[in-house]
Length: 139
Length: 160
Image 1: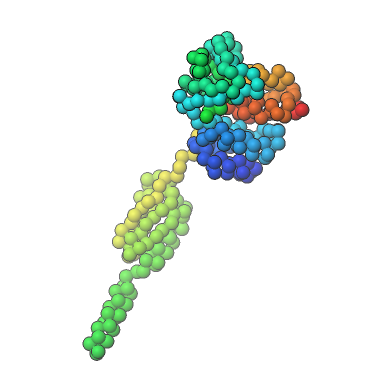
Image 2: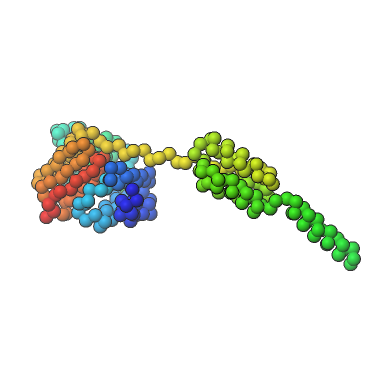
Protein backbone atom coordinates (compact mmCIF):
# COMPACT_ATOMS: atom_id res chain seq x y z
CA UNK A 1 0.00 0.00 0.00
CA UNK A 2 2.56 2.50 1.14
CA UNK A 3 5.09 1.59 -1.52
CA UNK A 4 3.11 2.83 -4.52
CA UNK A 5 2.11 5.97 -2.67
CA UNK A 6 5.81 6.55 -1.95
CA UNK A 7 6.88 5.86 -5.52
CA UNK A 8 4.34 8.36 -6.85
CA UNK A 9 4.50 10.80 -3.94
CA UNK A 10 5.73 13.59 -6.21
CA UNK A 11 2.76 13.04 -8.52
CA UNK A 12 0.24 13.13 -5.67
CA UNK A 13 1.97 16.17 -4.13
CA UNK A 14 1.83 17.95 -7.49
CA UNK A 15 -1.88 17.17 -7.85
CA UNK A 16 -2.47 18.66 -4.41
CA UNK A 17 -0.33 21.74 -4.87
CA UNK A 18 -1.76 22.49 -8.33
CA UNK A 19 -5.32 22.47 -7.01
CA UNK A 20 -6.74 19.27 -8.48
CA UNK A 21 -10.26 18.99 -7.01
CA UNK A 22 -12.05 15.84 -5.85
CA UNK A 23 -8.67 14.17 -5.77
CA UNK A 24 -8.93 10.48 -4.92
CA UNK A 25 -5.91 8.24 -4.61
CA UNK A 26 -6.83 4.60 -4.15
CA UNK A 27 -4.72 1.51 -4.39
CA UNK A 28 -6.51 -1.51 -5.76
CA UNK A 29 -4.95 -4.77 -7.01
CA UNK A 30 -1.46 -3.25 -6.92
CA UNK A 31 -2.47 -0.34 -9.12
CA UNK A 32 -2.65 3.24 -7.87
CA UNK A 33 -5.81 4.89 -9.21
CA UNK A 34 -5.58 8.68 -9.24
CA UNK A 35 -8.83 10.47 -10.02
CA UNK A 36 -9.72 14.12 -9.96
CA UNK A 37 -10.41 17.28 -11.89
CA UNK A 38 -7.61 19.58 -13.02
CA UNK A 39 -8.33 23.32 -13.02
CA UNK A 40 -6.57 23.82 -16.39
CA UNK A 41 -5.10 21.85 -19.27
CA UNK A 42 -1.64 23.05 -18.20
CA UNK A 43 -2.05 21.32 -14.83
CA UNK A 44 -3.06 18.08 -16.54
CA UNK A 45 0.02 18.31 -18.79
CA UNK A 46 2.21 18.92 -15.77
CA UNK A 47 0.85 15.84 -14.01
CA UNK A 48 1.55 13.71 -17.08
CA UNK A 49 5.08 15.10 -17.26
CA UNK A 50 5.68 14.15 -13.62
CA UNK A 51 4.14 10.72 -14.17
CA UNK A 52 6.37 10.12 -17.20
CA UNK A 53 9.39 11.17 -15.17
CA UNK A 54 8.59 8.72 -12.34
CA UNK A 55 7.70 5.89 -14.72
CA UNK A 56 9.54 6.46 -18.01
CA UNK A 57 7.42 5.47 -21.04
CA UNK A 58 4.64 4.28 -18.66
CA UNK A 59 6.05 0.76 -18.57
CA UNK A 60 5.34 -0.19 -14.96
CA UNK A 61 1.56 -0.55 -15.31
CA UNK A 62 1.00 0.43 -11.68
CA UNK A 63 -0.94 3.69 -12.18
CA UNK A 64 -4.24 4.60 -13.78
CA UNK A 65 -4.47 8.38 -13.77
CA UNK A 66 -7.85 9.74 -14.78
CA UNK A 67 -7.46 13.44 -14.09
CA UNK A 68 -9.42 15.51 -16.58
CA UNK A 69 -9.91 19.19 -17.03
CA UNK A 70 -13.04 20.50 -15.35
CA UNK A 71 -15.39 21.75 -18.06
CA UNK A 72 -19.13 22.34 -18.03
CA UNK A 73 -21.68 23.06 -20.73
CA UNK A 74 -20.85 26.22 -22.65
CA UNK A 75 -17.09 25.83 -22.15
CA UNK A 76 -15.04 26.77 -25.20
CA UNK A 77 -12.48 24.18 -26.25
CA UNK A 78 -9.68 24.30 -28.76
CA UNK A 79 -9.20 21.48 -31.26
CA UNK A 80 -5.73 20.18 -30.43
CA UNK A 81 -5.22 17.47 -33.01
CA UNK A 82 -1.66 16.98 -34.32
CA UNK A 83 -2.48 18.56 -37.67
CA UNK A 84 -5.69 17.03 -39.05
CA UNK A 85 -9.27 18.19 -38.59
CA UNK A 86 -11.32 16.52 -35.89
CA UNK A 87 -14.17 14.23 -36.89
CA UNK A 88 -17.61 15.10 -35.60
CA UNK A 89 -19.70 11.97 -35.37
CA UNK A 90 -23.38 11.18 -35.15
CA UNK A 91 -22.92 9.25 -31.91
CA UNK A 92 -20.23 8.63 -29.28
CA UNK A 93 -17.99 6.05 -30.97
CA UNK A 94 -15.58 5.65 -33.87
CA UNK A 95 -18.10 3.21 -35.33
CA UNK A 96 -20.53 6.12 -35.76
CA UNK A 97 -20.77 7.98 -39.08
CA UNK A 98 -18.84 11.21 -39.49
CA UNK A 99 -21.26 14.12 -39.82
CA UNK A 100 -18.79 17.00 -39.88
CA UNK A 101 -15.30 18.27 -39.10
CA UNK A 102 -13.92 20.71 -36.57
CA UNK A 103 -10.89 22.47 -38.03
CA UNK A 104 -7.46 21.95 -36.45
CA UNK A 105 -6.86 24.71 -33.85
CA UNK A 106 -10.41 26.05 -34.17
CA UNK A 107 -12.62 26.64 -31.15
CA UNK A 108 -15.78 24.66 -30.40
CA UNK A 109 -18.40 24.86 -27.67
CA UNK A 110 -19.09 22.00 -25.27
CA UNK A 111 -22.76 21.08 -25.11
CA UNK A 112 -22.49 18.05 -22.82
CA UNK A 113 -20.13 15.26 -21.84
CA UNK A 114 -21.27 11.74 -22.69
CA UNK A 115 -18.26 10.40 -20.80
CA UNK A 116 -14.55 11.17 -20.49
CA UNK A 117 -14.00 10.04 -24.09
CA UNK A 118 -16.84 11.63 -26.01
CA UNK A 119 -18.19 15.15 -25.84
CA UNK A 120 -21.17 16.57 -27.68
CA UNK A 121 -19.92 19.81 -29.24
CA UNK A 122 -20.94 22.55 -31.62
CA UNK A 123 -18.59 24.31 -34.02
CA UNK A 124 -18.71 28.04 -34.73
CA UNK A 125 -20.14 27.04 -38.12
CA UNK A 126 -23.06 25.43 -36.32
CA UNK A 127 -22.09 21.79 -36.90
CA UNK A 128 -23.11 19.63 -33.98
CA UNK A 129 -22.08 16.13 -32.95
CA UNK A 130 -19.73 13.98 -30.93
CA UNK A 131 -15.97 14.49 -30.88
CA UNK A 132 -13.15 12.65 -29.15
CA UNK A 133 -12.36 14.56 -25.95
CA UNK A 134 -8.64 13.76 -26.07
CA UNK A 135 -8.30 16.30 -28.88
CA UNK A 136 -10.27 19.04 -27.16
CA UNK A 137 -8.56 21.41 -24.70
CA UNK A 138 -10.94 23.45 -22.58
CA UNK A 139 -9.98 27.12 -22.64
CA UNK B 1 0.74 48.92 56.56
CA UNK B 2 -0.03 46.13 58.97
CA UNK B 3 -3.53 45.87 57.66
CA UNK B 4 -2.22 45.53 54.09
CA UNK B 5 0.20 42.80 55.14
CA UNK B 6 -2.49 40.84 56.94
CA UNK B 7 -4.74 41.23 53.96
CA UNK B 8 -2.04 39.94 51.61
CA UNK B 9 -1.30 36.94 53.80
CA UNK B 10 -4.99 36.14 54.05
CA UNK B 11 -5.35 36.42 50.31
CA UNK B 12 -2.34 34.19 49.74
CA UNK B 13 -3.49 31.58 52.23
CA UNK B 14 -6.99 31.50 50.89
CA UNK B 15 -5.67 31.06 47.36
CA UNK B 16 -3.52 28.17 48.51
CA UNK B 17 -6.42 26.72 50.43
CA UNK B 18 -8.81 26.80 47.51
CA UNK B 19 -6.26 25.57 45.01
CA UNK B 20 -5.25 22.88 47.41
CA UNK B 21 -8.66 21.35 47.81
CA UNK B 22 -9.46 21.41 44.11
CA UNK B 23 -7.58 19.11 41.67
CA UNK B 24 -5.49 21.05 39.19
CA UNK B 25 -6.37 20.96 35.51
CA UNK B 26 -3.13 19.15 34.73
CA UNK B 27 -3.96 16.44 37.26
CA UNK B 28 -7.46 16.04 35.90
CA UNK B 29 -6.01 15.73 32.43
CA UNK B 30 -3.59 13.00 33.41
CA UNK B 31 -6.31 11.15 35.35
CA UNK B 32 -8.58 11.13 32.29
CA UNK B 33 -5.70 10.13 30.06
CA UNK B 34 -4.85 7.25 32.37
CA UNK B 35 -8.42 5.96 32.11
CA UNK B 36 -8.38 6.33 28.32
CA UNK B 37 -5.03 4.57 27.97
CA UNK B 38 -6.46 1.51 29.68
CA UNK B 39 -9.20 1.20 27.05
CA UNK B 40 -8.27 0.35 23.46
CA UNK B 41 -11.36 2.18 22.15
CA UNK B 42 -10.34 5.41 23.86
CA UNK B 43 -6.55 5.31 23.80
CA UNK B 44 -6.31 7.52 20.72
CA UNK B 45 -8.28 10.43 22.18
CA UNK B 46 -6.71 13.69 23.30
CA UNK B 47 -7.79 15.58 26.40
CA UNK B 48 -7.57 19.25 27.31
CA UNK B 49 -8.73 20.61 30.66
CA UNK B 50 -9.38 24.27 31.39
CA UNK B 51 -10.93 25.33 34.71
CA UNK B 52 -12.30 21.84 35.21
CA UNK B 53 -13.90 21.65 31.77
CA UNK B 54 -12.57 18.64 29.89
CA UNK B 55 -12.52 18.84 26.10
CA UNK B 56 -12.14 15.57 24.23
CA UNK B 57 -10.93 15.35 20.63
CA UNK B 58 -10.21 12.47 18.31
CA UNK B 59 -12.01 9.56 16.70
CA UNK B 60 -14.76 7.52 18.38
CA UNK B 61 -15.70 4.53 16.28
CA UNK B 62 -19.38 4.73 17.27
CA UNK B 63 -21.94 6.40 19.57
CA UNK B 64 -21.38 3.88 22.37
CA UNK B 65 -17.68 4.71 22.37
CA UNK B 66 -18.47 8.41 22.49
CA UNK B 67 -20.80 7.90 25.44
CA UNK B 68 -18.13 5.84 27.15
CA UNK B 69 -15.47 8.52 26.59
CA UNK B 70 -17.78 11.12 28.11
CA UNK B 71 -18.69 8.97 31.11
CA UNK B 72 -15.07 8.09 31.78
CA UNK B 73 -14.09 11.76 31.73
CA UNK B 74 -17.02 12.77 33.97
CA UNK B 75 -16.08 10.14 36.53
CA UNK B 76 -12.77 11.86 37.22
CA UNK B 77 -12.73 14.00 40.35
CA UNK B 78 -12.70 17.72 39.65
CA UNK B 79 -14.31 17.55 36.20
CA UNK B 80 -17.10 20.11 36.05
CA UNK B 81 -18.26 19.32 32.58
CA UNK B 82 -17.17 17.53 29.42
CA UNK B 83 -17.14 18.85 25.87
CA UNK B 84 -16.92 15.71 23.78
CA UNK B 85 -15.84 16.57 20.25
CA UNK B 86 -14.87 13.07 19.23
CA UNK B 87 -16.22 12.12 15.83
CA UNK B 88 -16.63 8.88 13.89
CA UNK B 89 -13.71 8.05 11.57
CA UNK B 90 -14.09 9.08 7.91
CA UNK B 91 -15.65 6.32 5.78
CA UNK B 92 -13.16 4.18 3.87
CA UNK B 93 -12.56 5.23 0.28
CA UNK B 94 -15.08 3.61 -2.06
CA UNK B 95 -13.57 0.87 -4.23
CA UNK B 96 -12.43 1.92 -7.67
CA UNK B 97 -15.07 1.00 -10.22
CA UNK B 98 -13.50 -0.73 -13.22
CA UNK B 99 -15.30 -0.58 -16.57
CA UNK B 100 -16.75 -3.78 -18.04
CA UNK B 101 -14.70 -5.53 -20.71
CA UNK B 102 -17.30 -4.60 -23.33
CA UNK B 103 -17.10 -0.91 -22.49
CA UNK B 104 -13.30 -1.13 -22.34
CA UNK B 105 -13.06 -2.90 -25.68
CA UNK B 106 -15.13 -0.20 -27.35
CA UNK B 107 -13.17 2.56 -25.62
CA UNK B 108 -9.83 0.98 -26.52
CA UNK B 109 -10.95 0.68 -30.15
CA UNK B 110 -11.73 4.42 -30.21
CA UNK B 111 -8.49 5.33 -28.44
CA UNK B 112 -6.23 3.29 -30.72
CA UNK B 113 -7.96 4.18 -33.99
CA UNK B 114 -5.34 6.78 -34.87
CA UNK B 115 -2.46 4.43 -33.96
CA UNK B 116 -2.65 1.58 -36.49
CA UNK B 117 0.66 0.00 -35.33
CA UNK B 118 -0.71 -0.49 -31.80
CA UNK B 119 -2.54 -3.69 -30.94
CA UNK B 120 -4.66 -3.80 -27.82
CA UNK B 121 -6.51 -6.54 -25.99
CA UNK B 122 -8.83 -6.42 -23.00
CA UNK B 123 -9.16 -9.16 -20.42
CA UNK B 124 -10.81 -8.87 -16.99
CA UNK B 125 -10.36 -5.12 -16.93
CA UNK B 126 -6.70 -5.24 -17.94
CA UNK B 127 -5.73 -3.49 -21.17
CA UNK B 128 -2.62 -4.96 -22.79
CA UNK B 129 -0.81 -3.03 -25.49
CA UNK B 130 1.53 -4.64 -28.00
CA UNK B 131 3.05 -3.53 -31.30
CA UNK B 132 4.99 -0.31 -31.61
CA UNK B 133 4.53 3.43 -31.27
CA UNK B 134 6.54 6.62 -31.55
CA UNK B 135 7.56 8.06 -28.21
CA UNK B 136 5.96 11.38 -29.22
CA UNK B 137 2.54 9.69 -29.55
CA UNK B 138 2.78 7.45 -26.50
CA UNK B 139 1.61 10.03 -23.97
CA UNK B 140 -1.48 10.92 -26.02
CA UNK B 141 -2.44 7.27 -26.30
CA UNK B 142 -1.88 6.73 -22.58
CA UNK B 143 -3.91 9.83 -21.65
CA UNK B 144 -6.76 8.50 -23.71
CA UNK B 145 -6.60 4.96 -22.31
CA UNK B 146 -6.34 6.21 -18.73
CA UNK B 147 -9.79 7.80 -18.97
CA UNK B 148 -11.42 4.44 -19.73
CA UNK B 149 -11.35 3.29 -16.09
CA UNK B 150 -9.36 0.09 -16.66
CA UNK B 151 -8.06 -2.06 -13.82
CA UNK B 152 -4.54 -1.85 -15.21
CA UNK B 153 -2.72 -0.91 -18.40
CA UNK B 154 0.02 -3.30 -19.41
CA UNK B 155 2.25 -1.42 -21.80
CA UNK B 156 4.32 -3.92 -23.81
CA UNK B 157 4.77 -1.55 -26.73
CA UNK B 158 8.08 -1.20 -28.48
CA UNK B 159 8.84 2.51 -28.26
CA UNK B 160 10.49 3.93 -31.34
